[in-house]
Image (tube, rainbow, N blue to C red; front, side):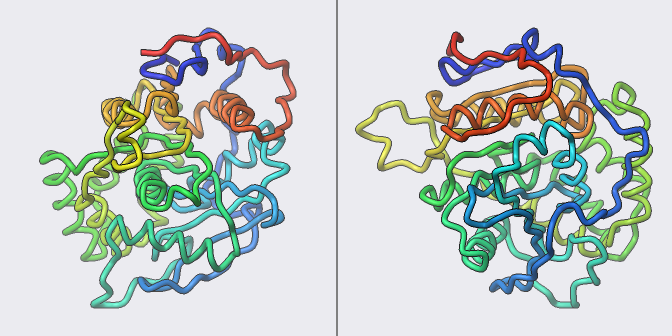
Amino acid sequence: METGCTMPGEVLDDAELRQVQLSVAPSRTLSEDGSTGTKVTVDTPHGPVTAAVSGDPTRPVILSYHDLGLNHVTNFQAFFLYPEMRNVVNNFCIVHVNAPGQEEGAPTLPEGYVYPTMEELADTITCVKNHLHLRSFIGFGVGLGANVLARYATKYPNYVDALVLVNCSSTQAGWIEWGYQKLNIRHLRSGTMTTGTVDYLMWHHFGKLEECNQDLVTVYRQHFERAINPTNLGLLVDSYIRRSDLGIVRELDPNKKKDVRMIRCQVLNITANLSPHIEDTVTFNGRLDPTLATWMKIQDVGLVLDEAPGKVVEAFRLFLQGQGYAVSGSRRASSVSIGEGKSC
């Protein structure tokens, strides 16, 4: 892991995390096993949204939002079941939120359904929050989900205690992304999952496929080929490539901060060195208050939650401790220290 512009005193060094082992279950599947909690359907102005809840809602809440081609099960089930992660979140309520039509077994969205914009997807979180009577939460998002949660935190800062964001983009889609995705959308909306679309999703999640865990690569490729509703995914992809810029700025003058659009909570900004989204996270980091941001790049992986869960969990545990949460330590002695660091 490498460090970039980080919160003073919260630099996470790769050498300190080397003892946190990679762990990929040999029998990895993307099928739902019930461990993500009780499913609830929440009505929103943009149609019903499926969420899953586990734990006591009166406890501090961790709310997750998934990436393209995935849902709360395929994106987070294995990670939240990772032994050290279970130790960390024992005293939290976990809420997983799905974008409309992306949950497992979702029926094809009706003809004429107007899919919500990214800003409107963020607003559906308010409906989930109110339905479950949540006061506030720690957001945990990946890719598209990271962008949704960043939007929500910008618009509703009083309801977000902290953010953990993986591969977050803060800008509009570039021309190459836009053009490639428009071709994918045309096929997806016709109900067809093409080889080109699968290849794009694999690149989006893993980056340099040949250097990633090949068992995982096979599992995810089969999932994208066989288990996705292409029409619904096409609508979500279209929403993502039409995303607006987050419009946030890094304002260092304390007298001006209250008047600008910015993220006002602590942010753990994660990427991986094989990921295609490194530059997105660097750009995002440059728009965050440096006293609130920690940027972290994990080495030798692409799909970071699956290929390096131990390293992510250890960083998350330290991040939570830095926010004042009492969390259990990992079963192994921690090899990470936060205290002496450098800022950019």
